[in-house]
Image 1 (spheres, one colour):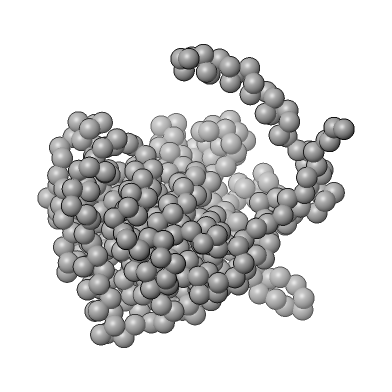
Image 2 (cartoon, one colour; image 1 turned 120 degrees about the vertical axis):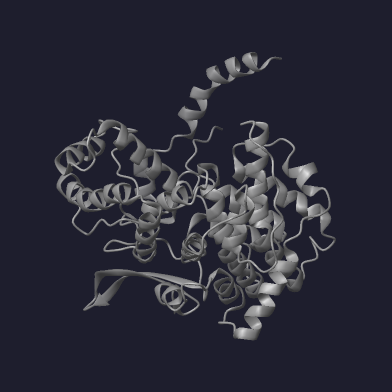
Length: 443
């Protein structure tokens, strides 16, 4: 049977799926079911406890929730403080990964030892790049990475050992090779699909994760200290976010079933690649390009405001009525990650001569919330989130869009690892939520 015949059959049957799988909204209210594990006010349903991170967006006063500037905490440390404590020539990704995974801040000797361990792990099996990554290359680098992760399990004799030490080692190994899987996957796609030149640079043991990423990505392997610093900060900001996000929850669900590290990380990758989770900065970039194409003078705030109004009225861009990068499910007054990243965006834009483009972002950041308040009658606060600027950062660094979400994964695997270890140590029950059946029964 041909694909045409199969799709012809499916086109006839698809309405049956829609008919029988559509559940009326009112039934969710009647049975008190929190769709998406969130109540009607958008607050997440409590499904677990963690000591790894915390997201704070309000304080309690006289029994009332008062919105405050957002805060993000890693193992008791404020992420803003962690980043501000670093020198301009100091990279913090590795130190923060140690903090998340082992639960405490490393001293100088512990950090150097940890860096040495990560450097020694930055090696793929012989011919793996050729036989796995370069075969069946794809524009979807997240899928390429996921395939590589699952294949790496075949090279590990302890994949299913169930021993905590083995899981920790596997987490550190994947943390180390994720940049290689991403960059090599992109080069394979760029060569075989885009007919670009092929070059595979090996990671260097003395370089940080951010430095190695840029070195492996670029043909000449060169980068500036500011470029590596900005990327390092972006990675730190994306490493972890409270535990309740979709991919991290996925990692805990898979871990609770007793599955192995490689399967767990592959599942988390599959969650992160979803456009509702890891692709927000790509939507921001698409929107910015659309604005440039349709606003003759982006420095004209009246013209820009009028076009943003059309976007909100579903008359422009993707007609979804959203200004992407503004607003967050948890933060209202401010996203602490955006506030930190914005300072580095300004420095990088100045160094790259991109101040005019930066000004467009600044104008949208100012005008967007005003328009949203007017049109949506939302006055609790709408602020830019970290995705508003992260795509612009990656673009200024010359990172192709195909690697935007993989970069998110390169950072977030540190958080996934910490949550997997916490779930293993807790050795609780398998995560098994309940579903209420509302099907019609036939005698």
